Image (tube, rainbow over all chains, first blue to last red; front, side, top):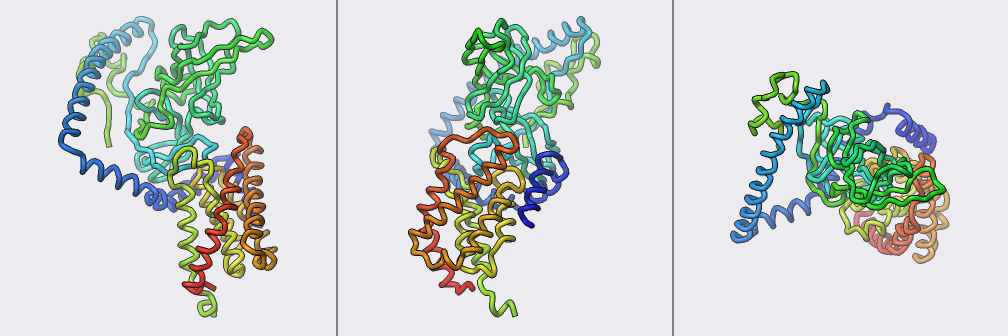
Length: 285
Length: 162
């Protein structure tokens, strides 16, 4: 009887979304377990932070300062470019949205099934996380949220074998799909025709065509391109730019909710808030 | 009447809790693939020791929690552990009489069965076949079985779980 129940459960979980609420409920039950597992690591980082030497902190502070300075310089340029881009797109009559609502989430250290590329993050329904939400880290797209509980949610990485993401080659705009390979540092691009202009070293960015991922974020860098004359498609592999197995902090993005940088708001083109840093919608917990 | 006969349910629950924690505790990358199936081991022990208390339903419940913890398909481990618990109950009187090393071999068979059932399910929903070291957890499970056995037996005797 229990076997039958399990099979029914599995079918429902695989085919339908009916038992998302059951999953959400169970995720509250196992939340304390995950917290207990988290404890040693949290205690360790707390100790190492509170016992860090003054000199070490000063060094870190200095290096962070220089890093901020460099990033600031880069964003200055970016902002002017953004405005220019919007103006140009207005000329072309196409809408473009820059700047998205972002929330920083942290990974829970609990290990999952080593044969599936999933991670648990410490933000859930209470933080308005939704299933299908894109997940980024500092270097690129990481994956998307698949299950949402009240306090935690599970995300699928782009390298999982059941994951595919629409991408385009940054250099010339060729669109294709990158499919997870099951190994943490490789994506497969099975649908690139033999005569397409794709070289190793090309940056692949999200194309936004699937409607789930925001366009323009780096996804992977093409690693190898092999042409087999007998096949109609080339054999292309790519390396994800996001540090899928190392990032502790991840960014949750709400692609729909954008801030004031819409061309419709400032038809004259000199968007007033564009150069104001306070307008960038970046939320920290 | 049950209160008088049954004793030490808390200990059983605690050992299962510990097993669940060990299932998700972070390990170095190479050790992750060797992690024995702690919940399965603890389940087999209690099925052998107190078959009238721990059985198929406990196996199903624990399997469901394992499914949630490891992010697998809901019901996958639940089904596998249910079958493991059933088989253990079916043969518990025979397995109990075995010396520990022979028990370990039986445990190996049960753990391989657990993994096989889980593998069938994941193949059925279209996941690719795992590498050859997928089966290591059963072997490490067999190796740590004597440890689990003696530890839980001393616990059972200490707390007079019956």
